[in-house]
Length: 255
Image 1 (tube, one colour):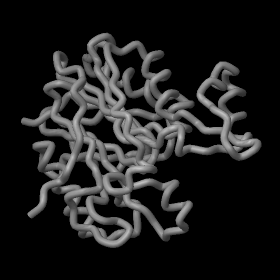
Image 2: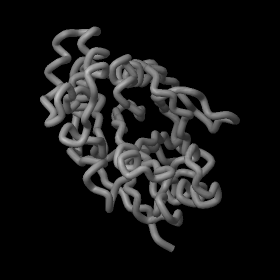
Image 3: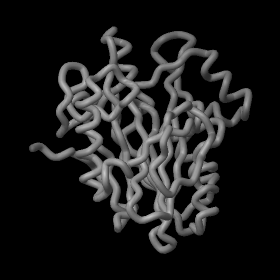
């Protein structure tokens, strides 16, 4: 049986974590092979087996690997046990051994957080909407409520669409510059007139810096251009494919 293939971030040190690639699962077709998206049209049994492999890699029971119903929000919650229905939010925090936290993405930023001294972990899904509206700050604040110290929290950003691959229109730019004119720095000229290239990882790094945590690492990997390892919503859209798989990032406090 194949194992789920994942990347790790040195800054998270002793935290049990994984930025899972698309490799090491059982899904087929456009979902090949480690699709973790229950919201996709993939075979549910295949997704469940993929999630089980991820949980095993993190050292927690599959029932205790918790991934929310993501809504591109600034909502973050604390969790200590499995839920009967997935909460609608984009950030999670926990201080409970045996619990694993996960978020999904297929171009959006997926971040993992840890204050190992306090025994508190976090995870958040930061697409452009969540990053703009404050999901990173909300996740850090929720970790603090569980005993984490802001200056002791370390965070890592996993595979994310990079600026060279992320062309947007003028109405997109306006949503940022209306909030703060200085956000214009995260947009570079595009070869296409009237469009721009958005630096989502750079904007996420800005939000992390504003949160005042102790350290941050960007794995600097582009979901769009690395098809062998990563799913990409934008790549799928450009190819007019019927659906796409979801990457998962997970972190746990094993028993």
